[in-house]
Length: 419
Image (cartoon, rainbow, N blue to C red; front, side, top):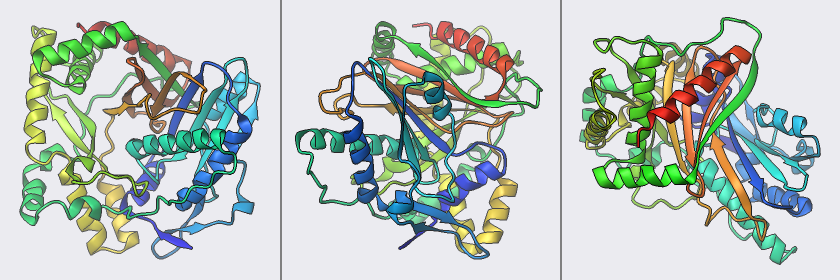
């Protein structure tokens, strides 16, 4: 059985080709005790039947690429078991081969407190649906704990195309987005995060955690001033970058952010794993004399203005038109040539719901998700929350000097959250 390679499948594939990122999604779950490795393996195997496209291989040829279902007997190991922490950590930053099935794998570190890491091909879905995959996996695991013979009677195999969003938007609004949002899409700032010029690099994921007490203070701050959590973090990000990069306030610093376009869906049931995320370019007029509150207000005003004008729609419209008018080769050429991958950006992955991420009786100590690992000179701040704590992450192909720079950045960002 074959499946269409949708527009964002192809765009994510291009990101590796153009040197933006390695198009992998990552999750790490640390348990308070043990989990059943056999049940976990069975749950992952069953989930490939529930979401059959994950058991496919990407096929490229002179025509349009597609996903070809591969017989389960030919799958490479779904889950690796190890007692070696170094092997586990190496797996976290490893890459899947999109030309070989399946498109997700896991590694289980067995110890007094087990840890699980899962990697999924970003070509299939964005972080929002990767999160739904994790909920599906935990639900299957929990049901198998209760009934080892359990077999799911449903499939997640619906429409993965941009039509899900496009058909919700009027032609008039699409035209307005194409014209009025042109400066809010596919734009790049000239500023770069400081990185080593050494050519030898290795992939790494660095994290920084904000504990529960400070997380709750930020939530109180948001409620008091009627701003979002994203507004607060983005404001701190702007302030740190202006100072760290020594940017003249008169010069322009724009930060692209990810936008989940599911906000336009009337019914948000999960019947497919797909990419429905776009980008929006944020911009504020920065002043060195601004207080933290002043910056938050500016960010909030900018975001509210964008949200009132179908935020993120411009990119969807451009891609849809390009791939409709031209064949695969020309479309990919045009997108690859004209797509301005941001040098500095941010993504708020959101909340990993502890009420949904439940693996039987195995309690979770902490968990986080993060996106693809960037190639220099690209830099992305990601954040996710779980059980009233925030995990910031930065993923990069870099070296020890780059790690030092990012650790210093985390220190400034932590101090910059002046709540």
